[in-house]
Length: 309
Length: 270
Image (cartoon, rainbow over all chains, first blue to last red; front, side):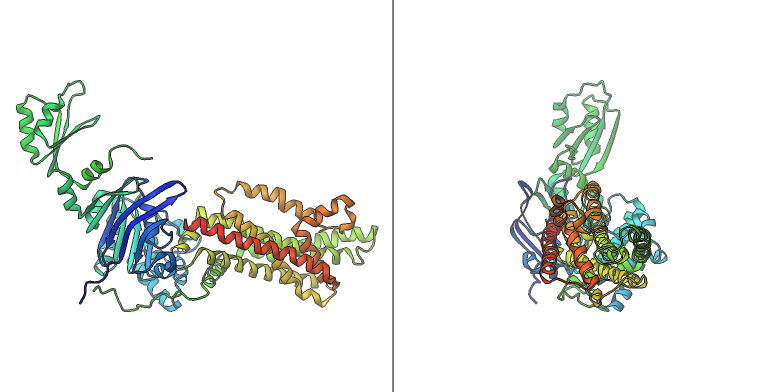
């Protein structure tokens, strides 16, 4: 059998808002069944990209196909086959949990009996069965999020797009969500996820891209990105605030050194070994921590430490 | 290939006309939250007709006799119907639209489904039309209980209600779709809705206004709704004037719909 066509193909994808270029000519393909991440600081163009991928907004220029369809002319047909979990919940607060699912299902022109059956399954999936009759307004943030995800599944989408699905959730709620997303993935649903949480990206994404200022600055599997853009380990040192440290001494001992206001990060292969060298050089840090490099190191390296508001 | 759970795999349809799903949604939402509006639908006509028609009417009849050949109750009842249509449409197309776009954001949720922004506009205005029709129909029934109907033309009054309402509702929906805050709505109420309520020849005939002010009154959209309602209620339907009134109300509705579709697309899709 021939290789199935990619689910999403984007080339030179661009989105302008007036004179502001939110997405600047990005290229990527997403295969059926994979879980694909978009990372990037605020304003990197992630949400604009998600809105194009979900067939809501049309690209300003460039080429984009979703399920092999053109969102410019076939938006409704694309949207019928995907689910979008937006950054902000858009639930009907005055209605009950169950009614939210039932009414949303009608947007897809599904038969009532089918919607009902799926809604009950989805309530179970979202662990909200015992809240079915409650008003959405009374739910906690995590419950609303789960309901939003459940609602986006009412049309049994082949592609589920999640824009920062776990922002603002407590760890319990996040882990429950992750577990549900794994389950969807194992059922063959393709996932596209944007997130600020690097551990989430490492957990959930087979492949990801890092966006900054509308560009893709890196792409690959999480582990490969770490190998490519970071060393194996990071040594974090804190010195007495009065101590004068020669950066040159440190630079010799590491592949890369980053001096932050409160600590020094040394990107090295073997953190313990480097620490020994530092002591040998006569330096006495107040504290030292050796850890594995993470996606967060890659992210900060690629997109900088400057705060984006 | 992947195997998505196939047990109840029913492909969503993208059937025509897609706006009927938006219409259905508004209806379903109303059917679950209707209680508050029952008062405005049934009680307001009774209160208005009692206070204005019987109360003020008693005074008018005592001092001036008939108004345009009718008792004051007969005279004022169609005007009240037009006012109610305007208020209902305005109420439905200001705060609720902004709410669905900004606060609760349910129109954004709808935009992620096969619905198009234009479907949302058509569905909402279709639903408002149904509300206008039923509310006006209730009005007609209540007017008849007051014994203030004199013509079979009155059966057309619900349609006058729909048209009068849409002449406000459609342009206001276009306006609301572009808003970021609800502050302008208060201004609209103060400077458009309330003045029209008071000065559209609703409570006394046009010729009671000073000559110089009459064109201003006739300029107000509600005047045409009131005039239309009155002529149908009295069974006195002059062809040219009726066409003129209809033309004003239809134009406003059509322009409103065109602009609302554009605004909604801009707001939801760009």
